[in-house]
Image (cartoon, rainbow, N blue to C red):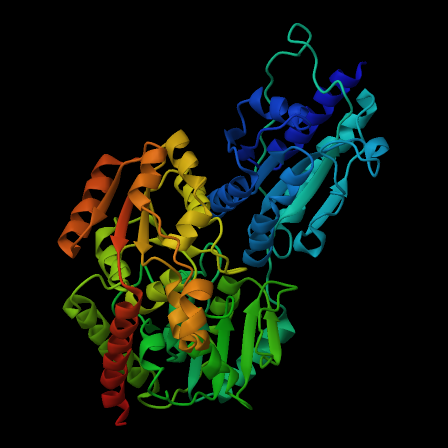
Length: 573
């Protein structure tokens, strides 16, 4: 058998292993060394491959698609710096626990460390950022193909086992990479198997320890932090009711949408806890990653001597404050259901006071959104709360957008998939991530700042190429608005150039470069009309809202002050 035929057999075996393990989507980037992988994906119809020209964008596109579908998504890329460009998305997938599979083509071992073109050391390149990494042999005969099939199946298993996350399969190929057209085998159909999801039942001893602490608690508090795919809504709401415990729900927890008005879920705490000290709990039960809210994180870190239990998958420990003495390993839904019978006797009025303060603060924040003249950045999420249909997706950029989501979105009864790249908190790749989410078929709105938009401009090619139902809302305040809330803002001589970094871009002209429809809105009725029009038309579009950074700082502070004043009235402060 020729080297070319061995390459084809091995690459097809790798794809066979992925398909048997339940993979249905893949991303392909251009290049030569990855030719066997590209043909193996292009010649079959079980796994749907999508081309993305830029590897950095491709990594985030795969991240968004994997998060939206809940299934592993492989990325086939060529050798050299192409692989390194996947690193930002791999780092985010690691911390966000998203199963992305890097299929990195490579030069054969004999060409490594010799100055060969497009050759870098990419064996275990991602280090501890991946759950598993393997360097396969360069195919030389039919006997090598089974190892590739096993690697495909194992890659899926390792991406889902324990803590879900990225893996790397490094695949070296000798030349000739592929047969001439006349000798290339016909299209094929790999076997399509089911996706196996591991279970994580909680341990009996750990559950009993948690029940004991809950039975002794009189002021229990539940914190639902960010979680990829969302925490299980119904079990956590039921747990809050059973324990008579307030549930502080992060906007990325999955508990901000699809929630009835009688649920003990709080959503305005970041606004009012800035100026009002909440009642002290005597027990805290935490789910998910650390909350988006800095105020809430500081409050949790201050609870010295208060028992806190962190519920996480086995091997997980997401607690940068170092104050959680007990980790309860297990599936969050199963843990919540198992703890609902703890028979806690809460202090009379404990949960009601929290809820009353939070509801009044939410009303104050909503009123502030309506009353502020001009383009208030926080109002974007207030408007989207009502504008988006059930089952749509909302992606928030980092820096100010995710914080405005936290403060001004609130709760809604209709379901909505809300996400953000909060693993590494980067501003890169956000639009590409949203494009990947939209590729799963649901209407998706992404809200980013102008700096983040510029950082991921290649994502507009994706929007044009695949025409997903994606609305890109760019809050253009000509720079990094979040820095106005940090100490460096006081250094006026250095601030604007080195921290605010105004990019001075015309968002609509950038969209026109990729033939995307774009509009600049000047009013909130105009904003609502543009969103409604996009929902009716479908496809991709760009919407620009121009704001003033300094004015928005004042607007935010007025809104937070109003929320604090409303909550203080409940607590008599």
